[in-house]
Image (tube, rainbow, N blue to C red):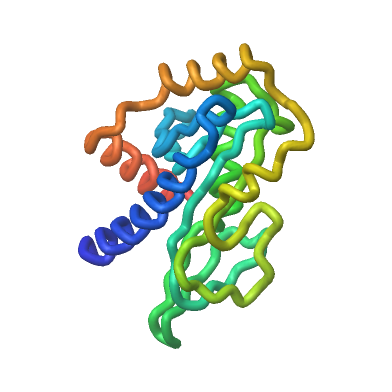
Length: 192
């Protein structure tokens, strides 16, 4: 079982790395990129793959690197990844997962939902058997970020404040933090 978890973790890391590299091409004067941010919440921790803070809002990005056939609708609690009739795996609806991230960021920073833009980006060769939700897309999120320039939502002072809050409250990126987060996920899974 641990080998399967490690393989999925490594595959997930590959998708996150591709997104991280692409976000590095955003103009640094306009976009502040934070990767792999783990914060404490009431029932443990939550880990956010990527956060991009700009005057056009805060882009909260959940990355999934999947293959096989994916069954799931926006309102479903969980989605299913199928490789064959017998190889099926349930996973948390990533739109719900990212919504939890945004709610956690709202509570932590004091900035409301109106400044947050959820993005779930799917990397990999997965075939979706239902339409993707509006918050989701296939491939890198950089085009969506660059085309969301209709309204200025944050001042320079607010951007600095948001980034500062995350910088000072995020848990360090260590193996201990990763283990703490995995324990947090296990605890939440047992209570649901």
